[in-house]
View 1 (cartoon, rainbow, N blue to C red):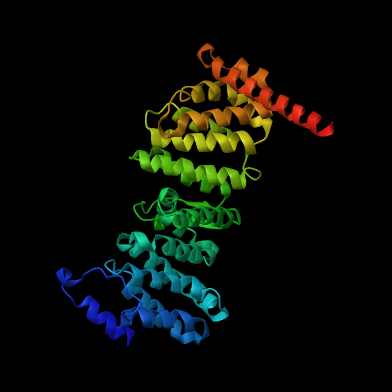
View 2: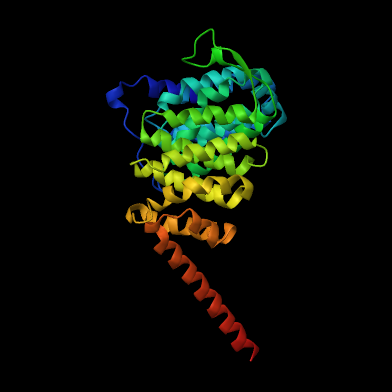
Length: 351
């Protein structure tokens, strides 16, 4: 029934394919939607030989970008299969078909289906054999860009997926770069590792658009926060030095991501790694301390409060140029005032 319903949809001329209207409480949803909901529900109870047919149905639905709700349901089927023993086995044995399906459907993925698509990609990566890790760089740019999604659930899914990919890469395996789209047939095969994952994400820093650069910095921030204890010190130091350079960018979107990265570095990394970088980080941050747009002034002040709390006023003042001294003085005075009020309240309570 679902196949016949899909044939009716796909046989319509493009001009007749209208976006589905909102279904009121008194209206029945389209037959294809109802049948897809039914398939998702019963899929984990189906025998193993039926799973190739399910993937075929999914491949027929994913190109239908004029029906975002139906597309979302098709993506939801993939994580649903992973919750059953037979489904997980099918995803492992037919993982190559699943990879091809997800790669081919990328151009037609609608914005409302972004979160469900990311969850489907996460399911595919979770069931990748160690020899098929070339799928990760094939979808990595999509994952990175999704960190800038307007939809909060889609952003959260992309951050969770970055962590999953990092865990998967650190577990080992091989990446046959010749199988990555747009890579040459003579591209070498490289071992999977956390450092290799960071290198792949860092490639976005030379992106052609500020949006891609900003998304790459945001992705690196999440990776640094999650894996800083496992990354080599030299890799972390290279991260900080690179972000330090981007702080001088005239693009506010890029700088906003740099401020987020700096906040994580200052609060989460060992002091012995961050302190040698303060000589350039402090002047770079102060360059945006008078910028009111995008709340930059507030963000920079908050970062300096964290730095002073962790490294002390003397060290921060040592690297602060003369024009930035009033900000440090203001933070110090505010800190002393809060401390004094706290002492007065404690004394009054004791009395």
